[in-house]
Length: 538
Image 1: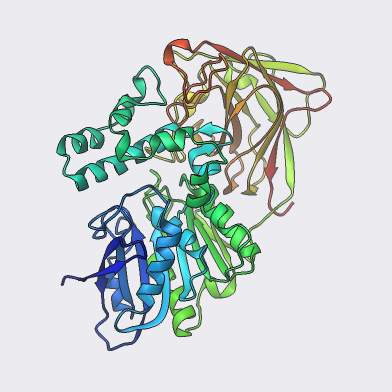
Image 2: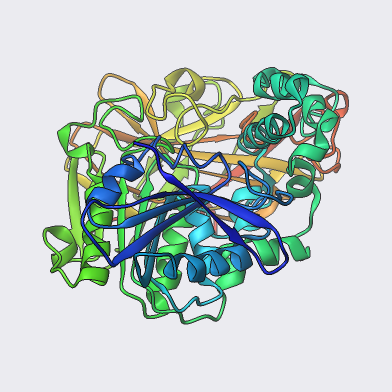
């Protein structure tokens, strides 16, 4: 069975091509529209059922190559044209032969953001959507993270987009070089400007994302947060994310914003990285409950909105479903929880970086002020491991915690279960012997056997002084005997470029100019350093 090929001629004359799958039953039918840059035959099948399955549920399914991708005409620039083109595509899809005039959108990652950007133009035919693992604030969350440029993730995606564009142009040599780009691309003179990307700069967006300031017009066009600011489009949506997905912050922020705008919104966050709904996707077996039927949930929403069918299961009873990494089970909430924050105070005897057992997290602050120091050596920066940085998301990082360039502070074994749901926050005074430095904070679960698994993390470029650093959201019930550990370091490479410690922006710094940096953390005193934990149930 092969799909029909259908085309849309945009107002500016550019032709967009799409595959169309029809249900066997006579129409008219509502339309499911997906718009993607990877070649329409992929159709997000890395995470979803084939479009033919969705068609069999009673929908006309349209998978469209966005501008400048696949066989569609025009020039591709990531996200830049998806608001206007998406709105035109929705109106066109609503009028296809056999369509009933109503459209829902679905899709994962880029395809999720494409839905949100199209929504910003308030197309009348758009009645429901399902943005899965989509970004929200493109500059503040995807290109930057609390001011720190996201190096590895952005570079790898730019190489992928560049390879796709090279293949489209028939440039086999450029395709081969970009497709082969790996971690060694960060070993050049300027790690944030990989030579392989510079050689093929016309094929991707890497330099724009690295260099464009927050007020650049591109971000206003390409970011869902900016495009949807102030809009009140009431379109029901199912948001799907993963605790180990690099778009987790965007999924939560987008859900919050659209729920606040008054729309009927559902949210589900599972134990998944960016490319899996499975129990084993994160590198550990989170049990049978982790195998979630996202396809069926999306169809349930579309059937509810477009066919008047009643919702069942958790979507009928509540709006938020979160997977508890400790219980290995789902938990349902009426709204996204915002529990009270409880402090754990950072403490040590001055040698927490070299003696793992000396750094502590406790319910009471140290009696006297003290300083903990750790030295970052750019020759051997602390590596990125676990969570959303690639490779197994759930993996033992005890060896990293034990490094002399990591300040590790650990609680005593828990005497009772500890239920955490929300975003931890680090409040501290941090100084350095450099005009600029990086601070990476990683919150870990330490098992009774001593294994350490990253639960949450934040990274920032700082200049010293008071720090309030919000970490990624989490949902976990810790068991008696477990411990919590906060690991602090001056690098997380290549997830972020190494700060040279000279005042040069890490995005432009050469590896040769980087110098060692000593970070000093104040414990105790008038404003004691503390980790605020979102403790559910008080």
